[in-house]
Amino acid sequence: MDESLESKFAALKAKGLKIDLTRGKPGSDQLDLSNDLLSMGVPSQSQSGVDVRNYGDPLGITEARELGAELLSAPIENTLVGEQSSLLLIYQLILANYLFGLDVAWKSQSNLKFICPVPGFDRHFRLLDDFGIEMLPIPLSGSGVDIDALKAMLDEHENIKGIMCVPRHSNPTGDVYSDENISQLLEAGKAYSKEFLFIFDHAYLLHDFLPSAEQTPAWELANKLDAQDQTAIFCSFSKVTFGGGGLSFAAAGTKLFDLLSKQRASMIVCSDKVNQLRHLGFLKNKAEVENHMKKHADLVRPKFEAAFNALDAMSPDIGNYKKPTGGYFISFNATKPIAKRVIELCKEAGVLITPAGSTYPHFHDPQDSNIRLAPTFLGLDDLKEAMEVFTTALKIAFEE
Image (cartoon, rainbow, N blue to C red; front, top):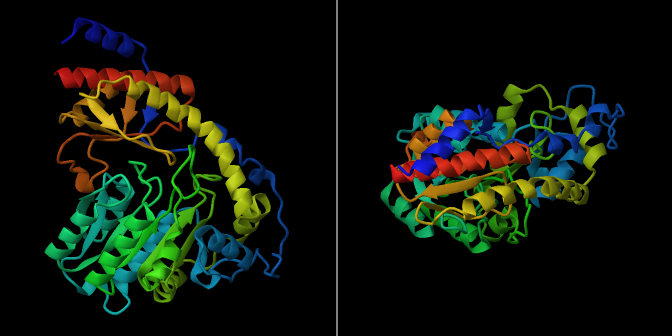
């Protein structure tokens, strides 16, 4: 190994760093943007006359449903308000299909399968694994899923129940699915089965930090192709206000919506209407949400730019990445099977990175090359040190 590289890494280890890059969490400066929520008083009644302190209104108060419908460009009658996480709503929808289904409960069927774009979101994989659903990975193209690979997968396999994807600022690649890509996806799934389920997890719907591609709302595209009965769309305020104290929203075709509502009725007594009213007082409408997110963007952008600067200085022989324009992650692909070794070296120097393989089902990255970076939680100084450790570890692993 290059002696200068070895001595540099020894010096980095000697610093005794303790830096965590594993999860895409907002920084404390981002959380401070919503601190007014902590002291905001709310009236006991909503404008629509609901006593928010009491039971009832399991789909959420009308005003909160209106906000969710506006964000997702869906009808209010097909939109509900949930707890802090869109992941929980997605889990409840999968559970409802598993226990009851629209026609036949999934639990009474064998060899359940779901299509998973990769690199993808580890918690989606964990969710599907809970139900014993086989995950079929297909690659991303830069503007959505690889349609040819999707069609080949549909031709090859039986009993594929649907696809779960992040169509805007995909986790972790940052892909923004084009309208054409989403439309082709909807057409292919519809042709495969009238029960094929399209789950669009819009976790980063509002999270642009650089100029980003325009995107027609998924509900509008599904409606245009008469696929709304097979479509469910989710978003949340987890990275808008507070991680455990926001709201989530779901919009779905009528049968799916009723199925999800039925499942939730067995699990919750009523929604947290006080928190809904608190958020409405703070964010009010879509325009106010977008203004709030511009403040987030101003805090997040310098961190991503610092990470970009460090990665741009790397030789393309070692690896490559696509600069995201929104979201919370950077997806780096090494040109050699060294992801596990890079993460091991980073840990030796006190920098924790999401485990290798996390962006693939069952932690199986066939190339051992994809590494997910999450720059937002750190201050700039810590981030720059973490990136120095990461790029040094990359060079060492590449030479080895």
